[in-house]
Length: 195
Image 1 (cartoon, rainbow, N blue to C red):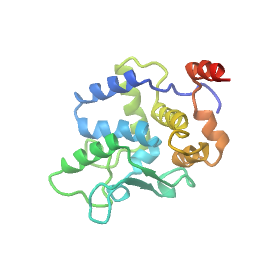
Image 2 (cartoon, rainbow, N blue to C red; image 1 turned 60 degrees about the vertical axis):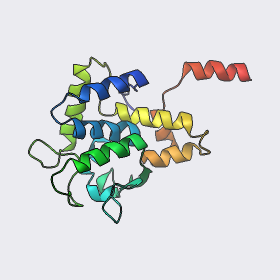
Image 3 (spheres, one colour; image 1 turned 60 degrees about the horizontal axis):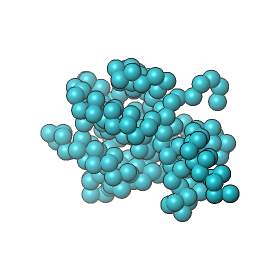
Image 4 (cartoon, rainbow, N blue to C red; image 1 turned 120 degrees about the vertical axis):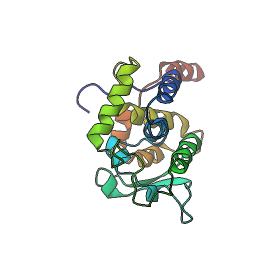
């Protein structure tokens, strides 16, 4: 990737953002938007195109996975992502906040007018939040990089491989997935002691 990559979040910064979002005009929507980035690794475009039909099961309840078709992504990045429990609960809270059950084709992330929030506005929203919190080097891609880095660190413990992380991220190559992963100096020191 050309240029400087978006900064990844530490756990303290994630809590800082989540606490800040509790005081926004649309706290439920905003929390879901942030968690879709850090807990599902979605791009701004994917967040924009996400509909309730992609996350609800046959009975109309928020399911256990998010089903992202190719046309909602970068063309060939469609995938199924199991829902993290924190993200799932936030989606349930947002779903139940509606006065009527939302239609399957209703967008999860909405603008002030109740219409789909376009990708550039989602990117701008992230930029505005991070600027308010003085989080330097962060962008709408920071959550995605955080997701990929954390998944790469934990995938071996879960019995998986970097190929699984690649599929969760919707990358066409392992090389692209590797470019997202932030190194960890503490882990490097620990592994050297194990050799």
